Image (cartoon, rainbow over all chains, first blue to last red; front, side, top):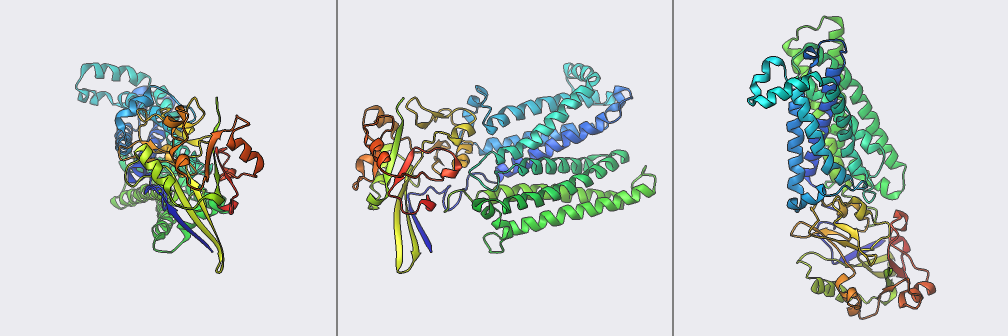
Length: 328
Length: 185
């Protein structure tokens, strides 16, 4: 029998850590979504090599939406900062061992590269919407460099997608987060949500079909990595094993995590099935035009994937803070 | 550079909590927040019970994960070897709080990280930390480990000391002697 009474406890650390809340969850989700979109629209814009540059850009709205999504995500993390005005100190130094420092520098760099991408993919007939003549000129010049800019955004998207997971996994004091599978899981789920988002926003049948195919493989990979994530923790030492208990416990306190787990293993496979169904239909027919039902099913599956990504991040952020290395 | 450490003689703690109050008073710690705590741990089956009173605080680790986690160098190693926070540089990202395996840090109402400083301002004046000064049972002993004649050096030579969560590899500078439940550390 062990009884523990503690005098002199801080509310944010006892009975468990309550340090990062929904704002961080939204930052991780929106950051991942933006990263996935950047990677996926780079793929769409880079995959046809021998065409005039003006015709290369297949995804023109995705970089703009990715920019907005990431900017909103960054706002949430700024809201979470206790002293946001001290952020200037973050830009007066770079701490290679601090993942927060990587984020402090990384997010504005990604936003800048993303802004270049937005300007590079704007179609000729839409450039007048830029209002300012200097922006139109920059856009004209950047359009010629669309491919290298897309490559840069691809790389930065991978960085951003994996960064959110590496940030959590760097905390060795939090057993649930501190493992090498988490960055891979976050990267795959980010790519998957990015692909899903592009399926939702794409107008061209060809692009919807391409990302439906890509997303099927990403969902399969995500489900495998989620299983490995839990297996790895289960076969580890006591604090790590304890860390996954909230997910598999039906007590009222932890039930929310069980629901999250069920949702992850329900929503994603459901989306996978719907997407596979779409794929079969497309393979038998020429996919120039969509029926309304096909569009609905495809968008519904994509929404499920995005919901799964959000639930996954929320569950991992909250459940992680329930367990610590110390025995109480 | 001195190597300031704290030795906690677990058997000498009487649980008066004077250390907790002295720390709050000395460092003007806000209501509801604490830089040090006392854990009362009872183990065994009735009637064969054993109790340990264990003071816990920032371990001023040699491999401090809080320093690595800090994006602005607000958490840093001071010239005297202790781990300190420059509150003017702290952005309140709370990464250091999550990085600390000992839950020694917290976020103040002003939104910056805070923790035990080993009463940095007092040791600069050659005094002992407030909790050590006020400890009735002389359970908390403070000094320079690099000085072979210091009380802490002598105690650590004599006793088989333990540190909290040794497996975490943070090399704490708070040592526990006469410990009862090394597993509970």
